[in-house]
Length: 383
Image 1 (cartoon, rainbow, N blue to C red):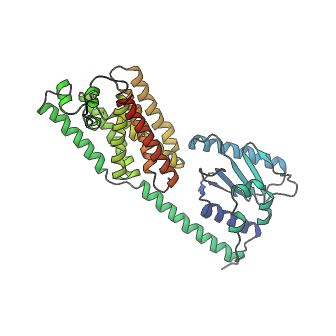
Image 2 (image 1 turned 45 degrees about the vertical axis):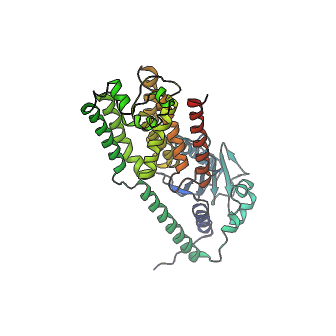
Image 3 (image 1 turned 60 degrees about the horizontal axis):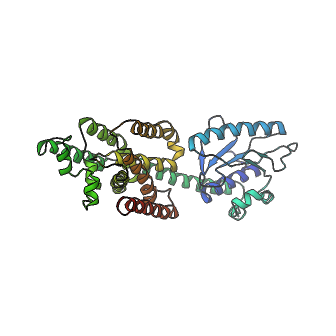
């Protein structure tokens, strides 16, 4: 076996990789055509992107070109991740003697030149953002021993992260989604078998439709039961098809219990908000389905590296188009749509996204959910 030489620059790179990935939770970004540089992202950090550049840069013109190319990549990341400012640290470990860095900043790109790990102390913006970087990059091992040790730890950590992502995105049988569709179908057929059809006002009332005056008189169950009723075949088919498309994804992402909670809570908040704007009979799962879309938005925000393009090109346009249809077409309870969507986002925040939501985020979600629900109840029943 040939002798492997680990240079000083190699040691700096592996130490930085080890620190940012394991200690700070950064994830590698795969970029085609990017040679001799490593991109890391952590969208919860003050510096969303950290670049470690080992490519030799021999003058300031080449440094300016590097900044120009970096900005182009960052613009692409901004679009994908819905971030306004993407503060970036570019750490160069192979700058030529002719390059005058002088703490150069290109827009939101902050540059550092490391000839050794001790040089980190020269850069206040790094020390302030990552106060443990100097202590957490001290190792007794040197050379190949150090390289092998840190590489093994990084690989082990990365394997764990891959397993977590596979667990979150792994497909499972959407039992709850199918049960909800089955219940909707049984009730819809029963309205024709037992009652006088899904368009008959008395049948809708008997089966638990949203009737504001009856709810305010104490029949609160209608806030939930109305979500399982549909007025007409088109309404029934449209909502259940939407549930069939959206439901399995969200049930996979959140799990069966959380998915059912999101669905029912969104139906509740949708119907509560509709009490403020409608007086007639209403029914349908639209509020619950908009809640699922809201929860999907919240989930996608946490996993926007993976789902950013889908959210931007599919989910957001779908929500906007349906809301516009609701505002411009009579007979559509858009208040239920909006209330359901807000409720879906808030309850998803309270329940949390697996491996992503912090305890603080969940507590904030519980507080905001409680305030929103309390506000709707007060405005509907006590104002």
